[in-house]
Length: 493
Image 1 (cartoon, rainbow, N blue to C red):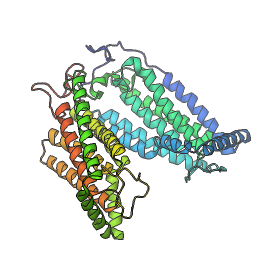
Image 2: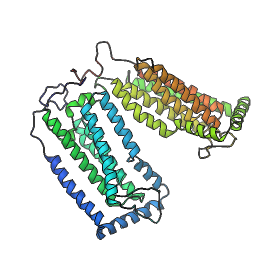
Image 3: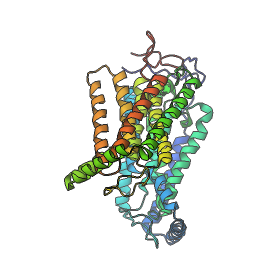
Image 4: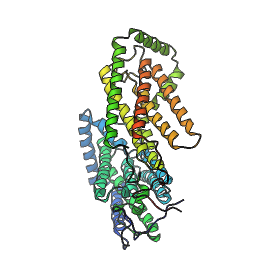
């Protein structure tokens, strides 16, 4: 059922709402902007297609200069690669997919369609223009990374412009009006940084990046104008784009009602978490030092278990356990959080479930880093199938701890908020994943048995503390509609 849409002349008690406005004449700034940017892009495209000498000379000079600078600084290529990753197609599809599911859950069907159409259109434009121009990538003296494909326009520049632009246009109404311009500037700065990394890494000319920016902004404006045409014909006015596509949907786009408290007892809850974390850290460190310095019997058991797992290795099992181990990798956990945190807020309309996820995983990471730095236990003496890992970070197991925290937290939330019988499957899946990753880390020779067991125990204790303090399983009070309260949406069909 769709929430009732109110025109801009409607009443509202929320001072941030855009509903308390008189109808305005349609603004034509977006149309004029699209025309100007379209002309600029056509001129740039013509210069690339014709191989205009001054432009090509400037392109070559900038690429060579930046490549010399980047290749001369040992740590700079790694930094640029991390920044450029934010503009990749994988990140774009994840962010847009999460936004689509969020909007679908909140029954914002038109905005959800806008996200899909704009994202798919950007992919089509990138592929089509690249095939039309067929420009080869730059050739540099000191290549930093290897990449394939065509050069104009830069897919990272175009994709990041569209992706982060869509997120801005859709969710900007959830930001207080005085922060609109700073948020827009921050997003624009990130898009610019991504484009600069493409030239710094030597995989694009400056004109490729400029072309990606121009075409991305042009596509955003064209789709926004088309959306606003519907918006206007629906009697909802034509507010400035700096207010977002649908500012009247502010309340429904907010992650949670404004009256919802993220922590039950405010800063007292935060201090409780800190106290518990310190105590758990002390217990981990104490146990680790006890095992490494005093308990020779336990160390013998650990060594025997490590040797047993090493003796069971086969080529096929190694491939399987390498794959299973990736479940606990940093990338996998971050991806899970990118999906689970916003969807948790979208489904529950409460701050506490997503906060619980972040605190559970973030706290686990801090506990692991602090404990492993103090204990400094060497990894098993068997052949290491993961030789690139720090040699003195065996206790506790970071992979097992991260898996237990992330998937365990998700399973707890599913069990608390879902009424379907399938919620028990989330708990079973979490247990199986923890067991599988634990066995995989033992098989690969990365950890001792006590490293793995300690990780499971201390993370379970941390999850229990987070659950008790944050109380993410609390449902709305009887009679309070989900998502209602101050600023809540009051009418539904």
